[in-house]
Length: 352
Image 1: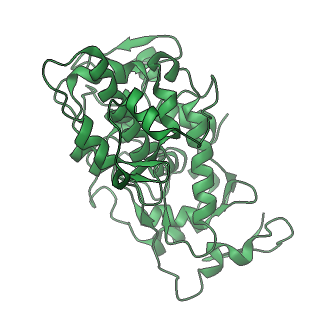
Image 2 (image 1 turned 135 degrees about the vertical axis):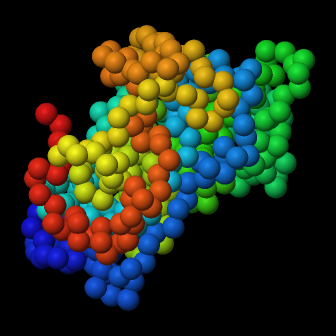
């Protein structure tokens, strides 16, 4: 799809891109030229509020959400996200860049976040017996002030379930793990418009942790990310929710523009895998860090991942390093637009 040129991302032919009059790129030459989208992801607040009890770690690992927890909070570059939203076309579900069209794929989600992309779909009903469901799986029934429709407050979950007593039984620990995973889902993978509630439609999927691990969470995250990109690109939206970290890490992995500079001299610089993959949130280095489709691979502290193990680690491990303005000094919307406008074919990494 052809575009007009520098800073003007309006398409020349609107017969396919029929939503151009509602699209964010239509405002590039108006008074909102430098307006940056606002975040709606609360992973940092969640990690500050709820430190995972070591006793529930085996349950979180069993569901395959432990890698998401260990990813933790990565600083979001909001001018970069804004620049990408301006190039997202809801008609095609692709980013339109000078070298062509690119998009986030199921393979990207699996490799970057380590989420499963095969198995049963993440689906269910939004018509729920809130009291019965929460009583069964969480052990507590929320009051009206903790609810917003069928969504429950993440802060309330933390207050009720984050500190199980020292002598509790296994059922209570499972309920605490269930609340932790539900809050993790709402804070990172499926953040809502405010970022402080999580829909209870996910709760029935946590009834059996082994079954939970078999669902295609990666497919659901990708669909939700597409929807949030479409919403943010239209009708003068001022915020974006969903898994924003996925969008940013995908861009850093796929395009050699607007990415942090780690001083690499290669033509396509990327940070190396860490020598020891520590638990970035808890103090204890876990015995197992990554699950493949069938196997759990061990990591030894102080040994650099190699070969089969390195391939099994999610690619977010590359970027789980402190980022500063020294690494990424060009966090300016206008500069990002210039860099993307000047993008060449050798600055993008596509699937083979």
